[in-house]
Image 1 (cartoon, each protein chain N blue to C red):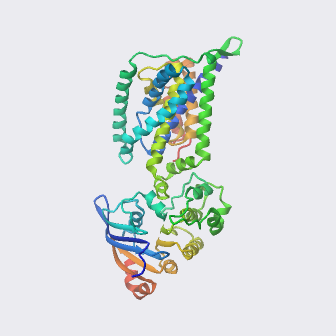
Image 2: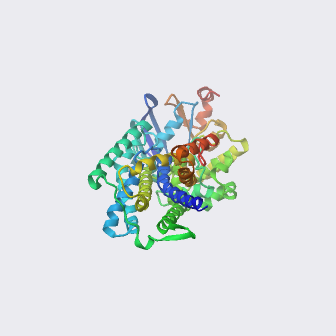
Image 3: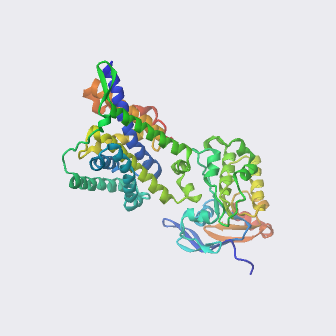
Length: 286
Length: 238
C-alpha cells in the first residue's frame, strides 16, 4: 500500500515537472509551428542555472525567482537570433537548426560547468520528511515542488483563459493571419511565446535540480517525453499537456516499480493507445 | 481635382510564386465610398484584397492609404492605419467567445474616432448580443459572418475590405448582411466588397470594377454597369 502511495506521489511530482517543460513545447509548436528540438536544452539550462544561482544566492527558490526572468530574456534572444527565421521554412530545416543549437548548448555547458554531475542542496527548511503512514515519510521539498508546479499551472491557465495576452495566444493558435490583420504584430507575440516556453522549461529544470542534480544530457530525456506529452495532449493544448504529463508521470513511476522490464517502452505504449482512440490527442483539433 | 482618395493603388503587380496574378492594377477608393470588385473565380479579386491588406506584398506598384505609402507594411500596421478586413471564409476565432472575438479587435480609429463600441456593434447585430458568451465555433454560418464584420468594425476602420461575405448563406441571412453593410456605409465607412451576387452588389456599391485575369477590364458607376449589361454578364459568366 505504501509503495503504491509513494509511486502516486512520485508520478504526480514527475508529471507536474514534465507539464512545465511540455507546456512550453506545445505552445511553441502549436502557435509558432516550430519543432524545437532544443527545448530539452532549456531544461538543462535551468538545472545549471540552479547550480550557479543557488551557489550565489544560497536558496533554490531565489534561484527560481532570478532564473525564470533570465531564461525568458535568453529565450527572446534565441528567438530573435535563430528561431524567427524558421517560421516560413519546413520542418526539416527547423529540425536541423534546432539540433545544431543542442550541440552548441552542450559545448557551452561543458565549457562553463564541466562534465561531472553537480548536486544542488535542498533548502534546509525543506529537508525533512512528512510521515504519511507510520513507516512512510515523503520529502517536504517534493511537496513544495508540486505546490509550485500546480501554482504555475494555474497561473498559466488563468493567463490563457482570462487575460488579454491569453486571448491573443488562443487567437494566434487558431488563426495567426487574422491576428495580424486585426492589428497585432505577430513578431512580438511569437517572441514572447517562445521566451515563455524557454522560461517554463528552465523553471522545470531549476525545480528538478535538487532532486536530479545537474548533469550533461539532463535535457535529452525530457525533450523526448515532452514531445510524447504534446502528442498525447493534442498539439497546442495546455489542458492536454497537463493531463498528458500527469498520465506519463504516473505511467513512468508505476512502470519502473511494477513492470521494470517494460518501463522504458511503457510511455510509448500509452501514447500509441491514446492515438488509436484519439488520433489528434486528448484535446487536439482533428 | 477634389480631395485625394482614401486608398490609392497604382501599377500593382502581385505574384504567387511564378504565377503573375495582378497585372498593373490601378485602384482607388474615396472616403466613405462603396466599391465592388467583380469577376469570375480565379481572376484576382481576393489577391487584390490581400495585397491591399498587406497579406501578400505586391512585387511592384504603390499603395497609398490616407496619403501614406503602405506597400510593404505589415498587415498589423495597415490595420492600425484604419483598414478593417473581413476575409473570405470568415476567419473568426473559434476558440474565443463572441464577446472575446469582438474585444480582441477593440481599438480607437486611426483618426481618433470611437464610433464603433461593443454596444454599437451589438446593436447592429442583435443576434450576436444573444450569443455573446457562446464560442465562435458554436455559431451558425450567418452569425459567424456577422461576427467577422462586427469584429472588423471594433477597430473603427475608415475602410472595410469585405471578401465574399454572403457566400454559402441562406437568402434571408444574405439580405441581413447587405442591409447591415448599407448601415455601415451610411455611417461614413468606405467599403470594398467582393461578391458574386450582382443584384445585391448594385444596391450597396456606387462604383464597380471587373477583374479578368488580374487586369481591370471595366470600371464605372451603377448606370454604366447597366448600360454595358451584355459585356458585364459575359465577363462575369452570368
